Image (tube, rainbow, N blue to C red):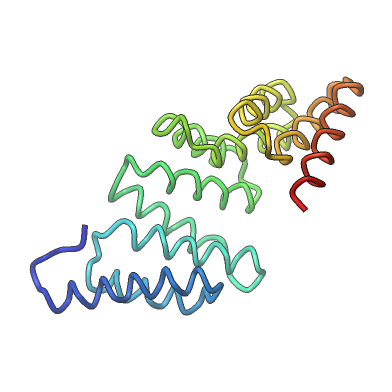
Length: 188
């Protein structure tokens, strides 16, 4: 929560935070990061500002105009300030995965799911990570759970098909790919 000690600073921090969120929604990630910089300058212990700056910096990294490490640092600080911040673990895990650091990514997805077992984004990403690590069995378990939670999402069917293919279970892979195509047609 933003500190209420100085109403002018608190008001400015709230305004900057809201502007930062609006810039994220508009895909203006550099401007968003600058707004969160100001929030952090005013309220250096406000974990959501680090989380949201991590979002902006992560998007810049995905777009190829930024680096992953500043986003990882922001999520790490959000976690240090709030060790129960499940979404910060999930997003830091995504950044590690993007960077190719699979062990810390897995640890973060596990931590996120330990804090919030209903974090579908962490579950889906952990399943994909298992696929990348060659652990088809665990990938199938996580993708199957993702499908159970939301059978209208094509992504888990595609991921599970890859895992089935790795195991040589081609009929199951074809069935999942057919279901994914059916869902994609229905959503277009």
